Image 1 (tube, rainbow, N blue to C red):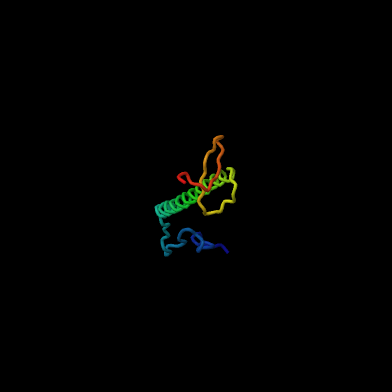
Image 2 (image 1 turned 90 degrees about the vertical axis):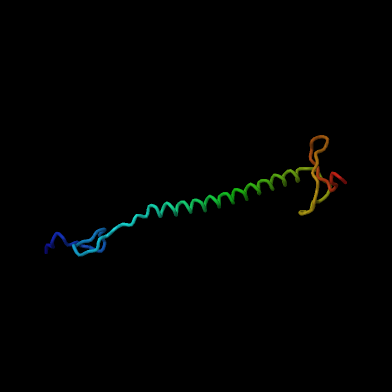
Length: 103
């Protein structure tokens, strides 16, 4: 059986109304909404990136100091959290001491 030209097979799936009595279908403009959300998201990513970068730089600095300290000469077992003094010797080698510069 032939159906009329103005009848759709799946009217619920069409992006437009399939008859004269159907409501008008308007697509909302979400471009400005998307831009504001993308801007906010980029700000969050940038903030988190800068936090991670700062943590990474602190970690690198700690590693550098640990490397300097443990490659220097010392005749005792250093305890984490105690205060020690790092000096350059006559031959430009570093050494760790319990004695401060004013003691």
